[in-house]
Amino acid sequence: MKALDSKCHSSSLIEGLEDSCPIEDSFLDLYEFINQFKSKDDQILLSIILPMYNEEHTIGKLLGNLPRGNSIEIIVVDDHSKDNSLKEIEKIDENKEIKVIKHDKNRGYGAAVVTGINNARGKVLVTMDSDGQHSPYDILAMIKPILNDEADYTIGSRYLGSYFYKLPVSTRLGELLIEKLIQIFFGKKIMNNQNGFRAFNRKVISIFKDFKYEGYAFCTEQIIRATIKGYRIKECPIKVYDRKYGASNIILTHLTMNLFSCILQYILVKLNITIFKRLKTGQIQIYKKAVKGPKIFSYARYTRHINTVNPVFFIERSPKLIS
Image 1 (cartoon, rainbow, N blue to C red):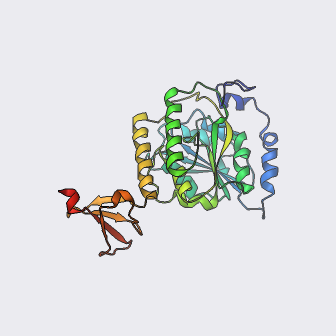
Image 2: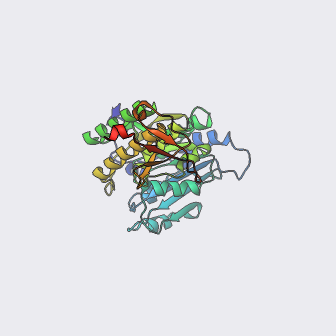
Image 3: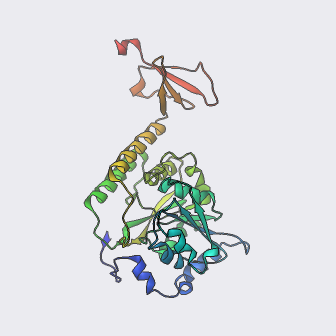
């Protein structure tokens, strides 16, 4: 783990970008790499998606320092910002190249990411936070494993890379707990599991359909869904900078409840016993193709007397257990 030990001891990415090299020079390696996979002039290979909510101090500088080109599209999803974020985008000289999508109400981080995904055309999609904590110069490291067919889904990790701020103990302990739960129940170790800097192959898009958590628990939900579907996930080293402007929108208690609810729900999905509701008869209605009868349900009887669009199964507790 590297913290506070970079050659550049900047507390904010935005400060660092102001003194950086010209954009074209900084992304030469990225352009050369993605051009290897280009089959026609108008093909979009890389979609960069930025969910945004009240980031008027950072969004303009961040957009001004992203890579550009015929193979790249930039999508900003405004989650009903109440500040001047949209006006800052209008000030950018190349703003016509930026696709801006507006939510008519605040729906949450996950919903904003999915809106961007649904409007993206790239072969590889990248999501980044718009608060200035992620470096655009790490995009190449994120997409290389995907285009080289070494991974389907990459997640940026400050623990494999560097971070330039004091990490709250509660944040590290929370991520460690989530890491262990995912590892135990789903067999995948992801240390920086709440990081929003991610990239994925277009074929992975199915995991973003019918998602259940529109807020920040969305990050954990997608790791679990990708794991269940057998996609290859890889953590990549990135740099994460301190947030210079504004404050995080995360409500810790709300996030904690959603995270544990999410993990429990997908544990049940993995056990093939997803429960939706209890009927007035006392039976439990389950929408799944089959209930194989694990030991914990050895006392139950399974019936298949009712058919709907999906097969419907019922678990009826044994009278002996009730008495």
